[in-house]
Image (cartoon, rainbow, N blue to C red; front, side):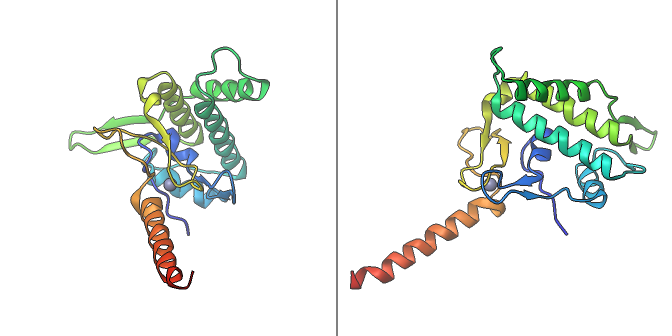
Length: 190
Ligand SMILES: [Zn+2]
């Protein structure tokens, strides 16, 4: 069972990160309605997603791929190819969907009502907000060359390199460490 991570600083980029290693061994994390339920739950988007079928999963994956294309292609400067224009239309279509309805009761309990439409609406809205905000200038891809996860670097120094230390930074450090050790053990005979 996959544990999803929310390290991107934006809902839209966290969804984009449910497809891993996009340049190499592409790995899909949203394979079933159960996966989608867990992602929505962990993203704290709506309290009860209600009935979901395979088409719902497909709609979310389609929006995910469209928004990924948009954020990595931005700014389009009016020169987008047909594929990117189609992706933009898809994001804008979804951005017209309703958003989750947030209500608060007198005890401070928050309820978030909505289904697949509201999930898509929230993700698309976040995408539109991201590409139209200065935050996009702080969007980075993880420094692990195999990892294609995107995040907004909100650190004061602007020096964040990894999607998340546990995910990539540590792995990279371990790989460098192994390499150093290997070199050290090879050197005497070379
Ligand atoms: Zn990474």
